[in-house]
Amino acid sequence: MEKKILEYEKFIEKESKRDLSKDERERLAKIHAEMLKNFQKERSIHLNVTLFFALLAIVTIAITAWEVSVNGWMLEMIPLYILALILVILTGFYVKHYYFLENHIQGLYKYTISVSRTPNP
Image 1 (spheres, rainbow, N blue to C red):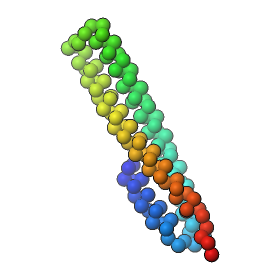
Image 2: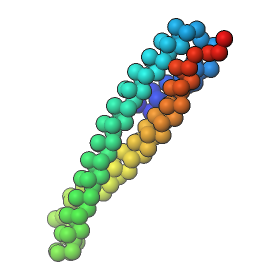
Image 3: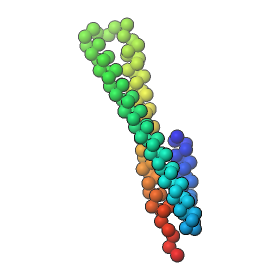
Image 4: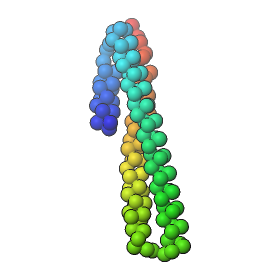
């Protein structure tokens, strides 16, 4: 997805700087609106996934902390410790990816006006 967004950013930047006819500009505006809609859906899905993994990580850490405080560090609980570590790492990667999506999609909004604006005769 990151590659697709970066490619689209290059495309829309190049096309928005070109001298386009009214029909070409309208077509580009429709394409841009559709792409933004698709990217916004992707961002929404990744927000939900990120929040889900963050919640799982928090719950697993809380269970691990409770277990350690009650029983101390136990070898039988190593899978729980590993699970908590994996969920924290995955959450970090999801937050990084969501941060990329959020920033780049916000950056695409600036092209909405320049693409839909008709050139001065």
